[in-house]
Length: 566
Image (cartoon, rainbow, N blue to C red; front, side):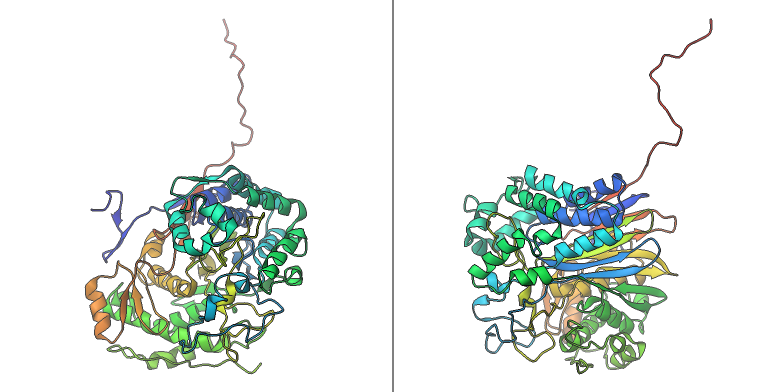
């Protein structure tokens, strides 16, 4: 039996394991309690949501080293208090020395499988792409924050220098990556010092990484991007046979992009544009679903699950054909998100059986990530997803720095001539989905999660849960999910066997999995201005809210003894 603190979330098939937090002055939700505390500390010290989000991201590089790092990349979707939206694209890019034929594809691999001989694009120096996280975070802080880099990095430095307790989740992640981590002396010394993964509860001190963070406080982002720290990283990777250079690090710049906007049942859905697939294909899938009464069909019923699986297959067929770095591929965004195209695709859907879906568009001529969501009382909101890509990235540490490089090159198609093929300077295509939903021009929901290709399909399902099924944010982030990109339909344990059988009867190859994607977190902005934060059972997610405030003006306290007459 579940603990008595659990409660039924819906009349459907699942229960929530965690409780939301509600506050009036600010809310920070990250996938680790200490990172949430770091962001909340900044809010309490007078910072805004952008300051708090950057503090949370830096702290996550310490306490979630398997997920996020300075030699990584990602997206930050920011809504400022004046209602403006911007997506800061800090996605990693192929080094200048990269070529379309730099890898040897595994013969006979399916079109959606990017495996290479020797796993060169997955593990080791040749898997490392040019990182953008640090430059992206500094750009967000400079443009929209109110605090200094030293201010927002202070919690991370304290955590690295003083240490923190290893969670069961981190310990399990170390165990999963142990064979590769053991092969690298620095990684072994950090995460498997006795030859075994660090046990839950053991204190992990990252002194070399604390020194790296202190150096960045003194030298700024240039320490990595053009300075001596970057030289150490580049020399390490080049010495091991990789292609990332000092010049790649020095010349990298984040890109400020306008978000993709679409409507769904009177709501405005706002998400990241290409090279992210999320904004475009979430809008596409919702456009198709808009033609059905999803609320009446019900949550996790055979009809609803079938429709979700079909729109996922459609979206992935189009993603593979046409969604990539817009500097290299002319992505047909307007066509993909149009109601007309949604109607065309919807007309081909059959309710009684699944089918094989091919792309309906082409480019014109020319589970291991982390996420945080932060909002403040002034109306600033940040949804930010960043990663070193796979678990522990390229699975080695640059000696003396504590830095774990990304393995983003695995997201490129190792075969030339495709939308996702390798090209010098090309940004990787991502499924990151830092999303927001607005009603009558006012933000109501902000959410996101880790999970590779499963990210934007999971974010879409959360939006359907919120808008169609009327779930709370806690219910929406914890609800069981499904995923497919055209082959097997993965289903989480919360989907009952009878529903799985019904899917199979319609021709879907159903595959039971422990989880689809990672720990989602979200914030709801209520009409009275209060903020509700939620995080799900799939990670160490923790919402921390800030309420209360300073003393009323003019209030003073005195220790003087009152004088009485008489």
